Image 1 (spheres, helix red, strand yellow):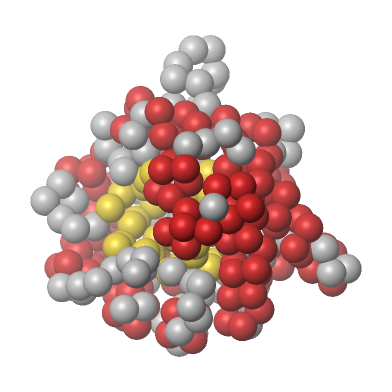
Image 2: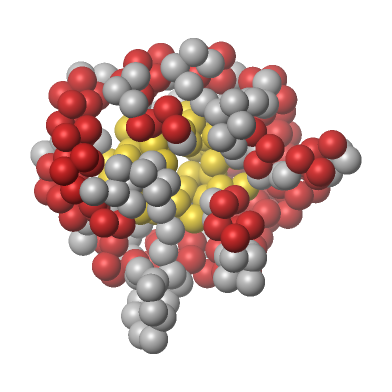
Length: 253
């Protein structure tokens, strides 16, 4: 049995210390009561340190929203694995917003390098994959997602693939209010993502790896997604910025 995992991606929100601390202070005791699900908060870099201190004795995990593949050096404006490892357990890699805004810097090749660096520094990568609207409409979902998964897992050890998290986020559903149907999301996860991993590393690895769905997930639809056999949780955007995020997590168990 794969343990469900819900991760809240705050994006460029709640980046002021007072606001972030106030929000976490509200939801922390309520989330701590929920059993049977891993919960991760992924705030902006600016509030990682104070939240890490707040969550030290908590069951709630902390994640960053990206990282560079180099451990240090002349990379102005970047953040490295060793910097994050002091505060975080997780890191989101390859989010579609970054792939779109800086494709020369965030692409299949560099994402794979970031994944390797995350493991090297003791971080669990949450790797985002997904197709855009044009690819979806042309029927290229399986090809695009399959290629992204194959590149992301290439050259890793089987145990690393088992331990990583893949988030299937159809780009056309992110922040639009239009989620993929649970059945369609489950099909892509089961018949494309897990199949690629099974072909590369074996069925036991494919079945051990956790795969989330992301894209307009909220407290009203999370239960439908979690009812699907191949969906192990969600990467949540806007809905993770409200106290109703607690209800979403409760519905995921």
